[in-house]
Image 1: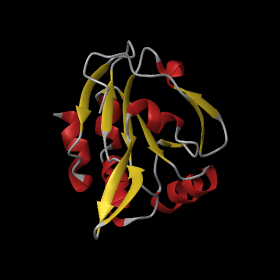
Image 2: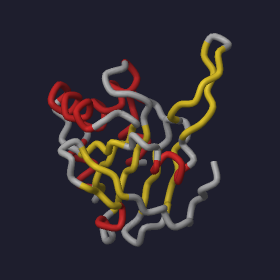
Image 3: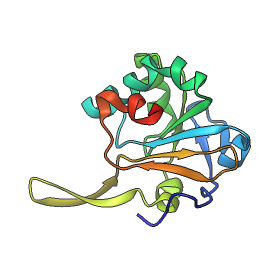
Length: 149
């Protein structure tokens, strides 16, 4: 991973689940949880999203805006949000623009087969757009606690 704590978080411009363009620079002045996850409706990703949903009020009290990022499209995000009743925005990074900038599109391996996929990583970004923490060992079922400590 090339980004470090203290770096300016790279800006991006992708659509959310409603097809609205979203830029990181739109959130200057706010603290951001930018979390990358592999795929909607898979067990680990659902557990992570639901943990953030269940602790959303505490995250908001701590001043965070939550943005989830995967390579799923807008329609998939919309269905995932409706099914899991997620109160936060999901970004459709179908062209991997954000993944490339944040170094989260990586070679993975399963059952001896190598493939490219999303690294489950979370970036905490401060009000000035600086990366204040990078969580590389995400605990899907307890992610909010990792963010809030």
